Structures are given as structure tokens and as C-alpha cells.
Length: 361
Image (cartoon, rainbow, N blue to C red; front, side, top):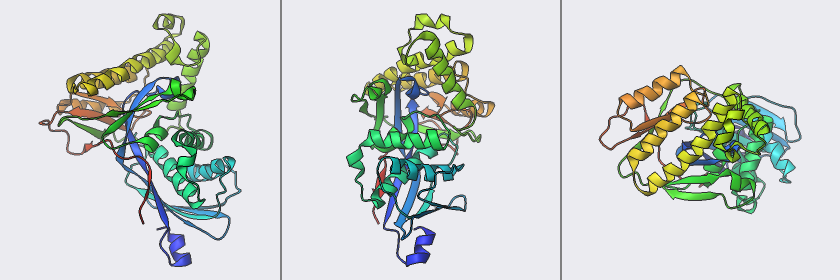
């Protein structure tokens, strides 16, 4: 329970919200390019325990960092790091008409930061659910897509990372043993955009291996790639790179052509991965993971020596396919292993799990 709440009232926190991390099976850097992606929520995540206070101050404690932070609910001065997410969520919910009052928040969980498993979206989602519950607002009233957009605004406007909606939707909408096929072009048109895809791996396993290199969306490379994609769209006269025609790419300078080629190819690989899952064709899925990694490394240019070493370790251990996941420039890699394979001992198995929810007690 929140430490300050325990000291102030002697009562346990009345609620706790869980935001899961995510693994993106395939479809990287396609969300903000109007394409397709196939993520799933995982069992590891962020827990926000919350209690109301009797003043208009939010007091937050990040237990893994041993840091505390307090601010008036009316504050709009910018902060950095995890504080930016807490302050931004309060501000964005106020802008939505949700009257967030004083609160004690304790932030913890078992999802490593900067490992490519979307700890930022997990934090945003857990904060959002906890603060809505304190305000007496049913999240179902707002809907998953609107909640995802609120969380994305926190990341974009307050934390400075120009991410799309993939991570937030995966955290909010995940289901046990299901991946989410997300069509971001349909989402932009306010059309049905999310399809649950069964993930029956028939004894095969998905494992993640941390490259040991931390990454941060708000720093450098991620925002640079997004700006390059926007420039490519302007030069081609399209709204998103997913609308481009492969024959047009010769009009682009080399780097921009490579970015567009990755997006178009990755959309096809998502479609192929859905078909492979439906046909229970795990070798075909593994080949698509390898193709995705090659494209992210060579066309999108977001790999690093540490990431390449982690991918090589998975392949040397018998992975049928492996690729970097998340924004790149560090983080984790994903490998697909047959039942009898022996992955590296420090690799962690991941399974599609339930999306964000309130915890009992």
C-alpha cells in the first residue's frame, strides 16, 4: 500500500491497478505509419496502489527507485523520468473532465524499465485505471481506444516520446492466449480495428532475452525515425507510409526509401504471421521473425551490437526465428523455440496474458 497512506490513516490502500507490459510478436514501427501490428500483453507489468487524500496533492512513491514526488493537482510545470508520467496523467485526465483530487500512489511491479517490454505504457495504463477508480469513473464508459489515446498523449506531450498507440492498446486490450491484430489505418478512421487472434503454439515457446542495453523512447533515435517517416510521407504525397506504393520508393533519398520499404514489408509480414498462427505453421512464423529483424536492422537501422549479440545467442541456441522488439536501440529480443530446444537460461518465457485490470483487495 502507499507508504504515506499507511502513515496517514492506518488503513490499507483501497485499490490497486495492474498495467501489463507487452511483447510485439511482429509489426514494429508500423503503428504511427498507419499499418498492422500483432502484439500481446504479458504477465509482467506495473502495479499502482492508490488511496485518496484529503487535500489536492498527489504524492507518488516509485518503490523500485526509492524515489518520492509530490505535486498539487493544478501543477502543469514539466517534470522528467517517471514523474512526467504521473504529472501528465493527472493533467490529461483533468483535460478530459475527470476531476482527479488528492491521492497517495505507490508504483511497483516486476517489469524491467528500458527492456523493450513497454514499461512506460504499462505505467500509463495502471496510473489511468487507478486514478479513474479514485474519481469514481468506470473505464468502460470511456472505452479502450480513448483510454489508449489519453495514455499516448501522456507519453507524447509530457514524456517527450512520439510513440503510436500500439503499446497502450496491447496493455489495455490483451487477452489470455490471444494476440491483437491491430489495423491502425482503420483505427484512424474510427472503424473497428482490433481482432483477437488465437495463439496456440503447440508446444513451441516464445522467450525474450534482455540485450543489457537500456533504451528510452524520448531520446534520439526513436523520434528521429518517426520524423523521417513523416518526411517520406510529405515527399510521396501520402498520409501514412502504409499508403505508399512500392514503385514510388525510388523517388525517395536512400534513408527515407529504406524506412518506407521496412513499413511496407512489415505489414506483409504481419499478415503472414496471422496466417502462420492460424495454420499452426511455427517454422513459417520463425522465418517471418528473422525477416522482420533483418529489415529492422538494415532498412530501419535501429539495431545495435548488443542487440545483435542477443539475437545471435538465441539463434545459436536453436531459435527458429529471432528479432528485436520494441523501439530499438537496445532493449530485448524475442525468439521462437521448438519444444525440445534449449534456450539460454536467462531468457524468460512470455505468454499472451490478461490486459489491464483492477486487482482485488
